[in-house]
Length: 389
Ligand SMILES: Cc1cc2nc3c(=O)[nH]c(=O)nc-3n(C[C@H](O)[C@H](O)[C@H](O)COP(=O)(O)OP(=O)(O)OC[C@H]3O[C@@H](n4cnc5c(N)ncnc54)[C@H](O)[C@@H]3O)c2cc1C
Image (cartoon, rainbow, N blue to C red; front, side):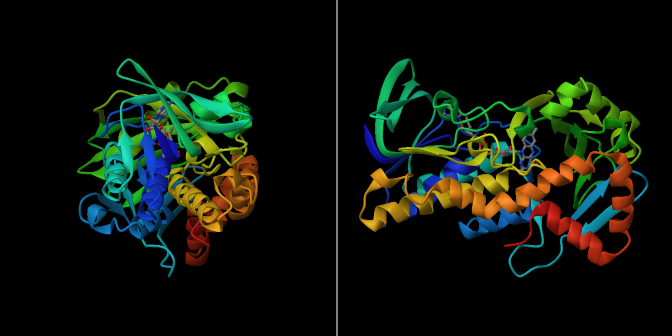
């Protein structure tokens, strides 16, 4: 089996990359170990920046009117101040986001790539990369008990935070500064929720944060997350923190106390801030969570999965059209440099923000000041959701 491009992982990063390559006539194979639709542990919050990417792929009709939208953002917990604001209108971004279970979102994206001509192989687990002369030339996979050797001009690793390809090639690090851990559970009977994405850096769970993301009809995705180095330093038990968030937090517990869980509690890691991944080696590029492309402040990764999927497709297409062939991917015009030039500055500010923001003495007055005027509230929403560029 030989393809121009093989993409491993059909989350938002992989399916987006496959979609753009297929639209441009590239012979592309998208592989996933699961059968779709499948569950993925997530908060299910699709921020306006991610919605821009979804609409750009022509998917507005598949989402509009079918899933719960949010038009405003709430940030509360450190002290009494609450930053609550509509998503500020801008010419570049939609004024809304969605809450969509990944079971549904990822299936829509996978089908979209398939409809545009990408070949899809589900239930196929990639075990390791095929390397020849220091260059990745394909993957070794298992499907229905049989072994498959699939070669490609370029391999894209979109295989998530635990990336098999990234680990096998020593491209990802397990430095706890670049890893977050989050758990989530679905609840029914959540009160006073609706049209709002709610994030709570509550004092009782500091330095973790909690969220309530409404799916409609009183059902919500509720979770807490923290950086791994905080979890280790403070010996944090996230289950216990979720309990505290539900029962003892000053802002959120009023909405959650009477709610009932309707799913098992599940957790997963996130790789954040481009810090934990080398992103490329000859013949292979990593995207999405495998590239550590998650927002270090909010833990939002779907936006960056969609965008790095599109950027990887552009990167590959540039090499294809240059006439120099794929052997230049990614040696020249490094993909890593492109990601750093797009997100480096923003993520660096994010790191600073986490350092200071996790200190209640700093967060309390900051929230007070930010909550006082519409302009400042808008600024904060734009900054947290990266609604620029
Ligand atoms: C609890 C939690 C809450 C979160 N909440 C939010 C949120 O509300 N909003 C947001 O924007 N982000 C959120 N994130 C982050 C978000 O889930 C990720 O950033 C996003 O899923 C990254 O997409 P991806 O395509 O890179 O990887 P993934 O979505 O992880 O997809 C990777 C795919 O690769 C497949 N795969 C893995 N290994 C192999 C293999 N060896 N062979 C074949 N296939 C393989 C997997 O089956 C999977 O389908 C959250 C994360 C967690 C853990």
